[in-house]
Amino acid sequence: MITAGLMPLEDFKHKDSPWKSKCLKCGKEVSPRFGSIRNGQGGCKYCAGRYLDEHDAIEAMTKAGFKPLVPYPGSQLPWKSECETCGKVSSPTLSNIRTLDSGCKYCSAQVKADKKKPSLEAILALMQSAKIEPFGNFSYENNRTAITCRCLVCNRTITASFSSLRKGGGCPYCSGKRVDSASAVKFMLQNGLEPLTPYSTSGSPWLCKCLICQREVTPSYSAVRSGQSGCAYCAGKKVDLQDAMRLMRDKRLLPLVPYPGSGKPWKSECLVCGKQTSPRLANLKNGHGGCLTCAGKLVEPTDAVNVMTQAGLEPLEPYPGRHTPWRSKCLKCSREVTPTYGSVSRGSGCRYCAEIGIDYTSPGYVYLITHNGMLSHKVGIANSNPRKKYYDRLQQHLSKGWQCVSRHEFKSADLAFRVEQDFLKWVREDLALGVYLSHNEMPQGGYTETFSGADSITPFAIKLQELSDKYLQDQKQSE
Image 1 (tube, rainbow, N blue to C red):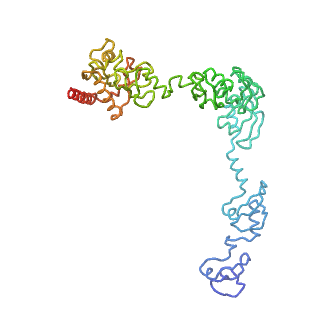
Image 2: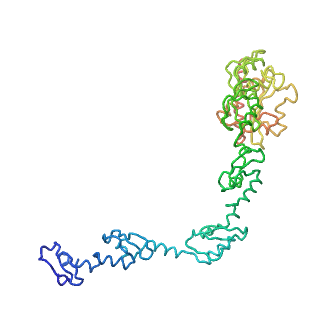
Image 3: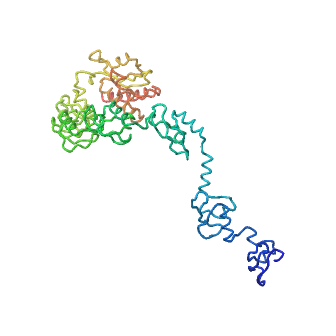
């Protein structure tokens, strides 16, 4: 032990027991184990730097620039202390101060900030590019320090920070982000709004009078500047109740419930037909009619039956809808037909008794045509000997650039019609091919029987031939 620089202060007990001794170098008492000393380990923990007493710990903290405020807690625990440089309180550990040479976190942050601090020349260069200049000498603390400047364009006094200048900022007035009261009032007047209260901020509601409709509104300056309408009434976003009631009266409608809003259905009674309807005020303002019944878009089943009866047709099933074929019996020829209510309400009726168009009792044919320019195919029927020349439907299509692929004759156009309907059912349902052309593309009519011509016409011609042969064979057997 003496060789290791330690003087035992008590009798030897065991090699693994702490042995109270005095360090011959520093004079402090320690308790190493003899087994550790013999193996070349241990010794004086103070001389080895592994341990400090409170006196040495305070001396180390003082040397590092700290004034301890509480007793020494140990080298690994936070030690509340006051920095003698900045006066701020922090809790560093003695271990970090000794091994990492760390110090006050506040002073350290300031050192880092000072290293990043831009030079005066850099700040002035950014100001010059933003077309502003400082008023005399200025102090700089950090990137967010407000510096009083003068705009070289509008000559207004503003404040700018290095951070805002580095992001491309400049004069808020010239950029439109800020406005003075006089300019704001002038701008609102130019947009048809007369301010009734002093200007506060760009985003605050500003009580104004619309110079068009004379109503009071509260738009914000920023909203009007961004292009939005200043008057909610003129823009259709807000409705005056008196105006709404006036419009309903003009449309011959009597509201039955309070006004629900411009875009919501408003339950009303039609003063013409007496039926209830629920139009939207926004649609009425756009010129749409109010009563669907009067417009013919909504039909009561009883009214629909009356229209069919007046046209000489007896419905054989309940009303299916305006555009759905309605199975009926002609009271004149007793044949079963399937016109739509919409077509009957426009003047049509039994296709057999009709004096114009196709005569279903006379010979007719079904045809298949194609148009290379429109990439479309079409099926149709016509009379073999039309009553008038302009009823020759096939000829009308051929004059528009269509080419006939196949034509199948029948003793009656009614058989041709059945073949056409079976063919269209196969195209629409089995092949899922919808109507391909529009009314504008086929002014001569017949667009509802068109389908895509992207595929070869051959399979369609074969299918039409099969259906025609089937009906011709059934016709022969019936004879």
